[in-house]
Length: 238
Image 1: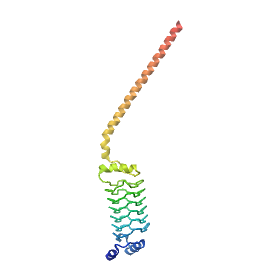
Image 2: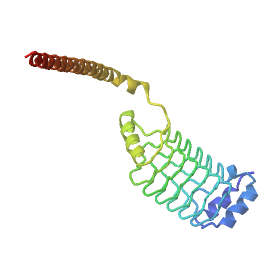
Image 3: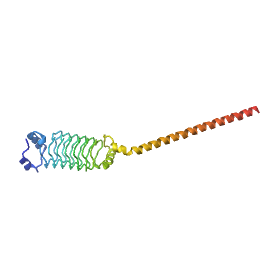
Image 4: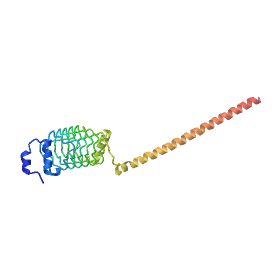
């Protein structure tokens, strides 16, 4: 059962409450049939609510409380989520392309395989969030709290730029669990081998020089000791 098209047309510009959404969910039966795109949902409180697969594209959901909510595979394309509490929310596979997530709290949220291309994450909190294989192309993370955020296998764009960005994010506390690329290791293997060989030869040469110096010193000390004994024996004979 789908939501009547005329209901959406009449109420598209009307601010909705949490009660309205709950009643709609009961009416449609399946959150995947819920279409509240372009609607005003500011300040709603649906903690641990189920909006899995719903259409919230271009909706205004700013300053809402969606902590622990199931928003997996939800269409939030271009939605205004600024200042929204999304900690512990399940956004796995959601469409957050060009969404406004400024000042949003996404602590410990599941953002695996989400489409975040062009999203605004300025001053957002990703502390402890999981963004494995998320698409972050065109997304600025300069002002984002990424401490403890798992960004393993996330897509950042061009390989030449992504490695540098990953290093910067790692220094700011982000986590990367992927193995180093073979081609990167191969690029430096020759130089590393040469440095290792040079170090080994230098160490060997230093050891040989040190041994010869010690041997020469012992020979000199033995010679001086024998010379003293000879001088002492001559004086005794006299």
